[in-house]
Image (cartoon, rainbow, N blue to C red; front, side):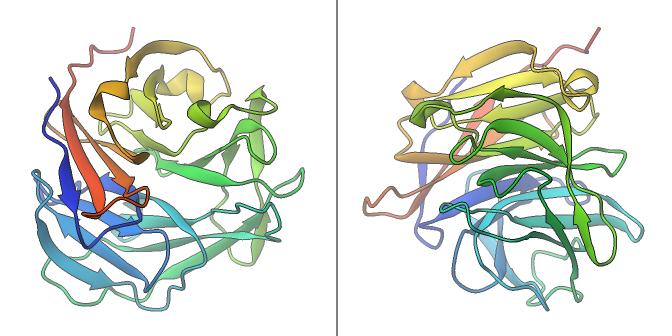
Length: 261
């Protein structure tokens, strides 16, 4: 079931979305440029709060996830965009998931990494329930591939997992967002025109075997970007304004996922 497309005036460059795992009904989203702020939304896209990530900077924020960390549950923000393919390193910021009514987070941890095979543009980040962090590259420049991001001090080297899906993707087939389901069984990867669902154990081993795909053309997003699993069988999407008035976009989809066998 397709929900109504809602405009997000305060998020014209909405690039990522993640469902809270500690506060039911709360979603975190962000712009890809501007101040280092994450925005709390409710399940209908209404803004519930704005939190500044203390110590974070914005180069090109592209995705966000909520997952385990030594302190409990944390927000992970991926400063991983690289439209020109020139970045020497990318960064993930991590902080304890804040309250939606907080004005500032706890100081962030910053994790830096480089690709083993040269720069890539990426817009997709997910964190598994086991705390593993993965990036899916966009395929322009470079290939569409899965990389494991080691969280360690200093600058790490990303580990490519399996073989690339393709060495170059067309405009409608470039991954723009990803998420792990709360139970850890599924990975969703979206593009501007579709969402694909993968069994998590296979996907994190580098196997690109789709279980099923949902066409997003009927959603009419100007520029689809982010995706997250809700805790009630709902999929939430955000997108940029695409230069249109009214701000970014927010959509919710009903999605019944069977257990992986």
